[in-house]
Image (tube, rainbow over all chains, first blue to last red; front, side, top):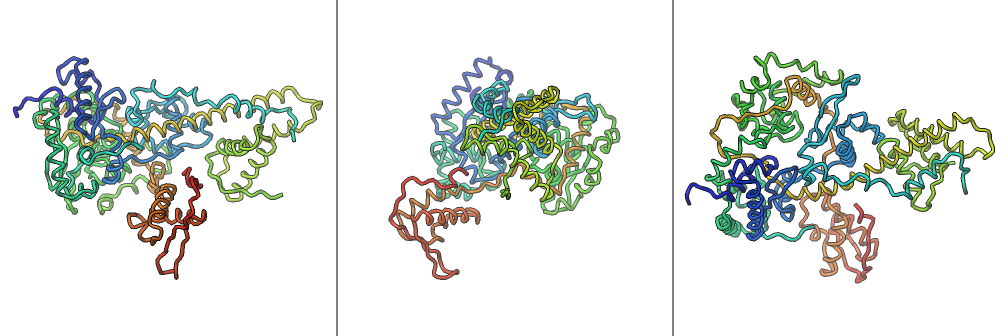
Length: 193
Length: 193
Length: 254
């Protein structure tokens, strides 16, 4: 084997060592080929991986490409090491994450207002896990920080961008639930039996 | 639940995610095959990698197996390491940098203790980017390295010396945690385990 | 009158209110306001008794609820103060809007969890570049200034160590339902088996506990008979020959 490597092999090596998804344009620059050629190489790589019964797959998340183990390998990885497998978020942390995802940039107080409960510990947890980050400060007393989601959040959700989040409108309660709630809290209606 | 995976594909996935070489015996246990079968599977894996013009190779080092990028990929990785993705500082790396800046010299274990999560990959990143460096070793079991910031770090932040770092006390949010600050970090004690 | 207040888990006043409403909606379409108010107040009382943190927010919502209830009880021809009426309507609308927002985000959080679980099964490599790259350190961009770094350091170092943060812990509890399914198959094949053999593959005590719970459930359904000569001897499990078809236990959901 000589010392020159095919662009296909070089692409795989880069997607292997990277610590975050790599945009197509950047891959094109490093490999000195066109972005179209990068897309074609990635297709070829995935076809090869599939054909050779590989445990790996190249995926596009957070606006870039990266190698991942196939989901079917997950049970083995769980058995192999607990650090390789993700920690599960509490429902409080998930709710805060949902609020930040759709309302960013959003402050601590605004999050607490929406959830109706103090959310500091969940926010700390998400900051530590790198799923949200500070996005500046408000010019209000105490200069409260506002938060936004990180590229890691997109990667962990397998999303290309925030635009791919499911529309919030799809999750507003259906009309009959809203109607029942309104009925319940309507003043001036005598209590029925 | 996904479909079942072949031991060959599972082996590749494990050698892909691992951060340290995995001994044959451990692979045998996780894959539920004999050690001889593991050796055979690794041979098959390397034959497959070669056949599909992969940028990766399974190699045995330090008593175990792991996937590595091929040496021929070096020129590409060199170019990649100065690309935007490779030099972007993650929020985890930024946190580690902040800890090292204010607590130097500080060890891997102490950093993990302070942050509450494993920080090895962030430390590696900062070392590679030349923002921190080894500052000696502790006389403790395993002789763990301690880290300090580099002149490049000062230059990047526009500081003349470490003495010009803003005092930490100015940025501790609530008064009651100030006391806990010193409590958090006790050199030597943290390193005990 | 007596109220049995179970130890429900709720996060804050909105969450409590939502849970009370959902519970009532199980059997009736329109929820009776007075039931909700009564129960909400009962919880408040219980929380005070247990010395739990009853914030002003709990009280504010209680006050709105009581006002709405009082208003609903007034005879239709009673004289009303228009200003008060409007203020109450505003309060009510605000409460409704908050409830709806809260429900919406709870709902979408479930979707996010699902997507994360799916995506989590794809594991990336995190070790970075192994080869010693012999080029000068690349131009790194530090996305903050010295003051920003001080702020980050202060925040990291101030993390309380005495209250362990359990928010991200995955207890990785074994599934009792899975244990039930597995035991049903095995006991039908083996007819008689010792409990120790049935759990021989378990690695952690908590897994054995899951199988034990599963065993109790199977015994309750009459699918197995369980005997033990004395408290130190082996638990013997015998198939009764019954097959109750597709049973779902209360564990199925968890």
